[in-house]
Length: 143
Image (cartoon, rainbow, N blue to C red; front, side, top):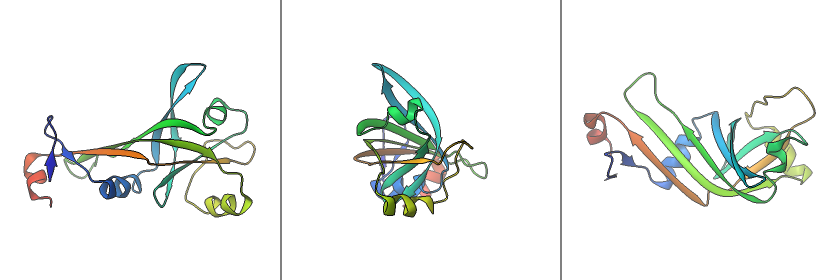
């Protein structure tokens, strides 16, 4: 078990992916007109890729076309003193293949829009890091 300088447990890649699989809402950071923007998004995991949906013509749609983005999700537990945060940097790609679109449509991915059908965006998890914050007794008891 590795502890960082702030006393937080450093999560492995596998633990980061497992934590992301438990969350439903995250934040995506994009660059639009040379300015950073952060959007809350519903998401789902597809193996080691993050999947979001967006609507055609939105800022999020135009900012996620084969570009580097940042993504973050966290999950403070209301049942214990454990909280976690996972950050990723990867490439956002619009899904155009109809077979892949149909497969992603089966994911438990709620849409925040009732307008046109969702456009799916996958985000690679090339750089992935995470931290776990807990009472020291909880951290010490973890493998």
